[in-house]
Amino acid sequence: MESNRSSTKLTKYVTFKVLGEYYCIKITSVKEVLEVPQVTEVPNSNAFVIGVINLRGIILTLIDGSNYITSKPAKINENSRILVFEDESSGFPVGILVESVSEVLIISESDISPFLKKSGGQNYVRGLFHRDKDVYVVLNEAKLFENSNI
Image (cartoon, rainbow, N blue to C red):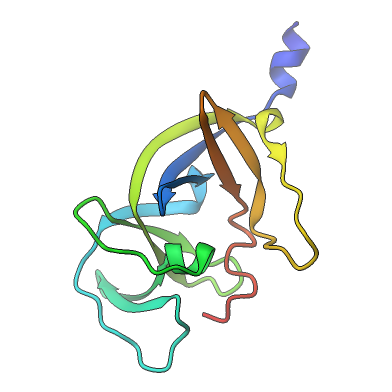
């Protein structure tokens, strides 16, 4: 029995909503969670780039999580938050605007179901996690911005 416990890897995930759907990403990837500050637009940028913000002297690219994941623009409200990540490929911080941040879940890696993708599907989806009636899309933080050309 003891060997089963040690072989089950538990990981903490931050859960958030985008267009009413639940997503989660490893908590170790999220540097901080912010309320939405004033945003400076950047001309001729990708449709999913809202603009930039000044985060304590660091210029942070702000991505519309809804537009990036679903191609539908988000509506900012009092529950909207920015999840700050460090982009694995560039090493620069990036902020993702989400509808709301829900909670932290502890998930066993064995409870993440594989996600079947069509050819050319998004590589940043690791799988799906089910809890009660809710389904969470588990994102792969290492591949989240891999082909985005931010």
